[in-house]
Length: 440
Image (tube, rainbow, N blue to C red; front, side, top):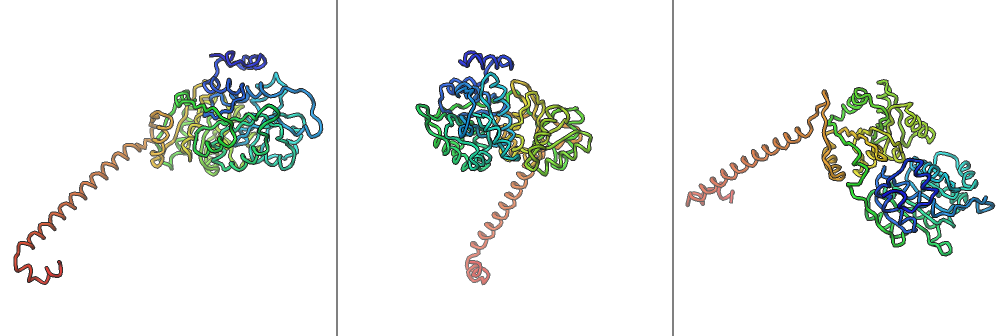
């Protein structure tokens, strides 16, 4: 199937051809025709599968391509909103809209925290009809009356499960309550993308989607197929040394390193810089300017390594990113797929390496079930921490201990039984014995 078969306009076909796109991804094949018909959908799709284009292309087609200059209160009204969990993802989607929509009159505005409302208000008033936003910042604009959702035709929730995990459910409901269910003869068009379908997602979908069509992409179709996954077993205290060795020895450049905490991200960054490896970190304690600067330097190859926490790492979109390293496994198994999906994008190959300590082995097995494959283990000279062999030995040792304890218990039971039998055969003497009276 080609993009031509998706019944997109000549404007979009021209742009798609210029971008070098030829064959739509699985999610695009299934979702775009439905979205062009304004069907509500609830879809699973991982990062790197063309998810953003899936909802942006139909949005550009379906919204009125109005070039009239807005005046008065109309300047604050938008036709569509896209909600995303992080500012990085907001910026990424906003940039994609500008790229895909260059033949249209649509104008997008990115709304997120960390910068003053005023500059964003100017962009809204300048004619924006699509707002891409984090939930908190959109609520600020609603309260400030610098945006009006009374004419919103389309609502998109991207990475809905992540937004719910981050506690944004109330914000989402508050925002949706500001949008109309119908505008004239048109009903509001609503779309949800989520990596997983937990009960809370189903409940949210039921509350604002209208007879949604569910699209689930099989695990075999996930972007992880283009990613070579590897594991290195290593002691916790030697992870920094191994990370340094992997990057230095292999002369890796453009490596995205994931860790779970801001403190650990700073420690890794300092260690690699001390070794002469140009590294920067992005996480919640960094200002928006610092995060954007670090990401731009990374994209421009001015630095070799970018260290990120999971929240800050959402929205990192680098097509030719060759390496992702999990310094530690994520707090949630599903985030492993989001992490490694930063490489192997747009049908490019990539490599994802995980540094696994003994305490993470059980979680690794859970992740292997999630991605439906056994991940290859590689040993490095000087870091041969044979975790699995140790666990097998520990289990054998424990089993021998259990057998030994069982043998001792059996011998003790036999001894007591024998003693009891001897006592019962002693006839009248046993009845006269004060000891036996006390015993019984």
